[in-house]
Length: 174
Image (cartoon, rainbow, N blue to C red; front, side, top):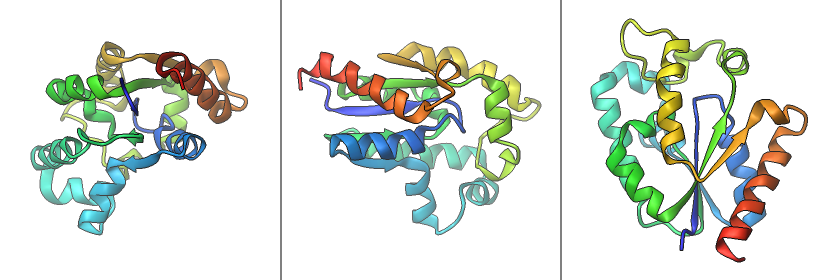
């Protein structure tokens, strides 16, 4: 039986905000992998990415994600690029209810006005919008539940949490 919740979605989709409140409501532990990496380096994610480069950053991200495989009763907010690690995603899928926070790009664009400081790995030549389009089908590969943020703009966090809890109650029989 799955006993963790993994929130996936593009940077700015609300994984941390929703994750913290969801963990509180369920009395689960909350882990934000971006904050874990920042704490390890005592630096902001964007600065770490600039310092070590995207190849090393991806390895650091992957190493951090591997530490999550044995967690229980945890809400996990990973970096948006988690979906590029299919081996890890498959292992996490066995232990986690995967929730995709689907946010339209026009909302993300407003939330990510200075995205260069956020530590988003964007391959050279791609715009933020192109990265969004590239990632969207990958997020959809793994999900157990889709939260359509566009549909719930008023009270998004509370409605999203209620939907997630309703789903896991029916699936986990808690």
